Amino acid sequence: MSVHEIHWEIPKSHPRYESLKRRERLVECVSAGIATLQGLIAHGRGEAFDYLIGERTLNAAQRATEVAAELLLSARKPVISVNGNVAALAPRAVVELASLTNARIEVNLFHRTEERVRRIKELLERNGARGVLGEHATERIEGLEHPRGLVEREGIFTADVVLVAIEDGDRTEALVKMGKKVIAIDLNPLSRTARTATVTIVDDVERALKNLASEVSRIKAQAQKAETEKREKHVSSLDEILSGYDNKEVLREVLREITRRLHRLASDL
Ligand code: ATP
Image (cartoon, rainbow, N blue to C red; front, side, top):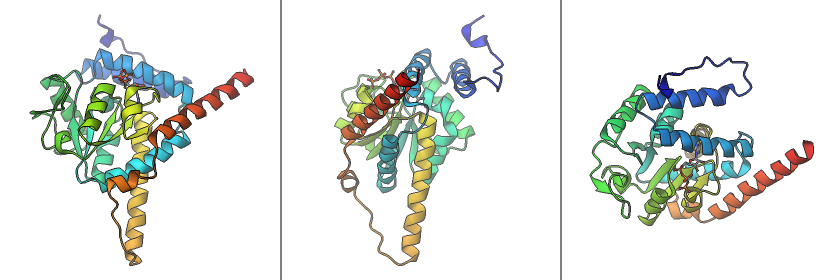
């Protein structure tokens, strides 16, 4: 029996029910050719950090989310990059955010196979996505050897804002070097992705995408109200949005929030 065939019925009363369900979901997605075994390891690293932050959205993550929402709304060409773990854990949240921001979705894989791209695309389509990119990746992200550097011309290659989640540091860095504003969702505030992205949301991918969608909706509702009140609508440039934002300071604040929490937990033991 392969590891994929072992399935557990998780009792709802289990204190870690949600987390165990997510693991089950990922294992199923490995069987379905959507996620990889390496993806399971990456998830484990993420879970460890989620424990440290208390499995909730930190204030610093909220601050980054507000700026990320502004970037997505002001982008000329926003793209949400989806890999196996993201597709497995949050397909609906991806589709909702894309539709709220008019962003394209591109399947972009570290361990790329055409078959896996197709399966992820189909999963996203079952969740309501349309026009998913990724199958015609003919362009290269400079500095990344084939095939993990392959992207679509219509998508990531010409995007001005790219949202990545559970991403590898090399690829994030290469996208920033190409001049893109990169929004990263990563539970590890110390990862190279977290440290090289333009805006880092240190949170679980599903929580972060849902918060981003709420924030985008809030900004859109506010803009609509302003327009009905005949106030002038000003569309900010990406650099204007980022002018008062310091991503390194947000990461420092995450580390401080974790440290404070650990001190509290240590004294309560
Ligand atoms: P880097 O190359 O950026 O230094 P890494 O080597 O840890 O980081 P990977 O293993 O490729 O990179 O990526 C996994 C990253 O995604 C890790 O930083 C991990 O903490 C994070 N991660 C895993 N699961 C989740 C999740 N559910 N939500 C958000 N982030 C996650």
